[in-house]
Length: 71
Image: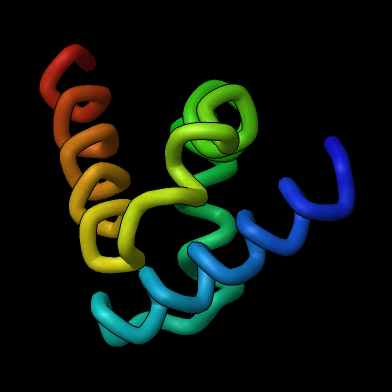
């Protein structure tokens, strides 16, 4: 993971935490558990970092819902 990708992931963790009224640590655990960081945020960084914060947070929510529905 590059420094830019790392900074983006941290930024998105905090953005999600603010929207979901959770701690960044809780959000990190959730995103790590559903592999959102390694399977979505980092691989698609080139596209995602050009989107607005609200759009990416919404995408993360959808990503999580799809994974929960497939269990």
